[in-house]
Length: 367
Image 1 (spheres, one colour):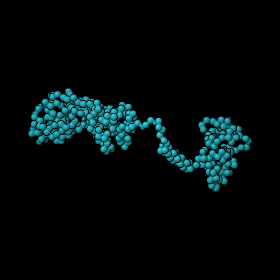
Image 2 (cartoon, one colour):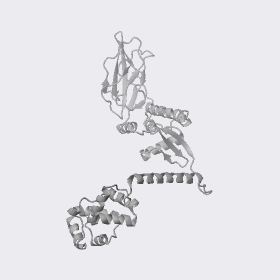
Image 3 (cartoon, one colour):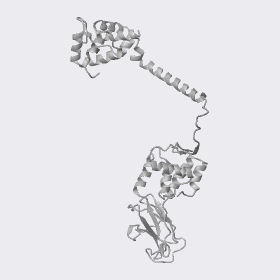
Image 4 (tube, helix red, strand yellow):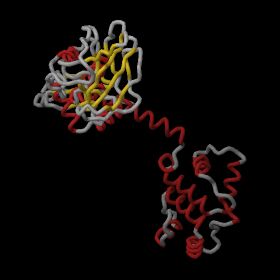
């Protein structure tokens, strides 16, 4: 109670007409408000003891409850009786509890109340279960929509019913939900960006009769997620070392490896996103340099996904309830074929033998 005590409240208090909860709330206020204590003292009959030093420490709520329930042990009960003999406030509160029999509601015994709540909850659960189990289905009730696609995803479930309702993909945007909905309907991932076939062109380095086994492996004619991708190629027989060169379409160098003995390389610097990049590998054998690809073969092209999709996929992968299906759909739409296949492989382990996962792995992409 923060507002001052009204005249009507004082009259009801003196007439023993306040419920116990309001009495204790009023007591709390009087202990800190001299103005209301004065107002109460002026309205009280002469000789009536109110709050003050002569009353001593007031009884606590628990002591009042125990007193009215006859559970307050001696000598504390005798002390409480002596206190109430000179304290109108505590005597009035205890009297109201006894007369209205409001103790279990206004001042519940906390351990017993917990059992009452638990018993009530159990009874409610049993009642609801019985109603659900035995209540007959009305003959005119519409049938529930059939589930047309369902799979486990990161421990949860994703379902699509015949009305198009999609469940289990919380946190996805409307556009993302539509992409997943269409993929489940078609049982196929969306088609991503493709690279048109390139005509033969001029590349870095001379044509030195490249050996058939010396060829690039990855990335070729694809889009990748990392801006520091791993480049791999087949070895040139007898080569002492290799060098990788990455350029833009204008053949401006963007990254260059040193002389390395391995057939894999990852650049130390980040490459630009959302632009076509070219790469070539040079091999040295007996003092001679051989390049691949070499004219008249077309250049090896690739592209790095834009930053927003990289950020979104990172967010999905670090989420406690990440959706591998959503990640696969987004990767496929962006042309990230390897990343999409990795996400579907995770789903396959969660859904062994699932025809839906088999369709997503083998079906041609939806355009």
